[in-house]
Length: 172
Image (cartoon, rainbow, N blue to C red; front, side, top):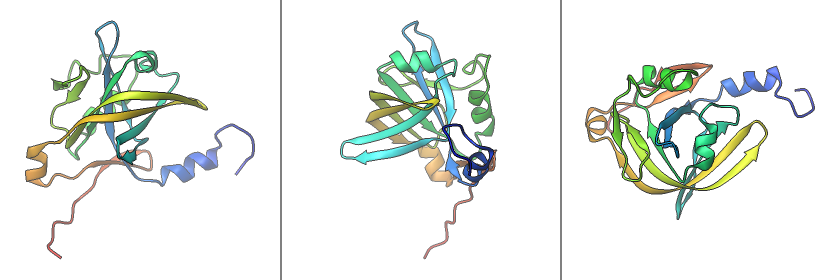
């Protein structure tokens, strides 16, 4: 792999082999508009207190809103929500116009039908390279009961594409 601070082609290729879950992260800006993006860089930081982090490209159209907002929501997408993931990954259009949204308790919108949701208060913004790392404490969490009942698996991002992850429900 090349040296220096730039992202190399080799790094991108290796990281495309890493499979990750897919979430839509949303907030409400000071202008009362909804903002959101598709994230595959999302993880748990701590269980006590419940804390997560998500990474956002600093040049994203929604970055200023997330930089100023106190609350964000994470909607973990199920296998049947590829189009939602694609919509929130695109630039330059109203991502919320064709998406079923539910109001969150703390002001950030939630994607309807997500297999799980988290409502979080942002506690830290860390600029790292070309991204902003948002660290947030979870104040509400809930699985989608219908997704749990149906056994729907998560949507996964691998090799630059979205995939359904089949769940093995056999008894052990």
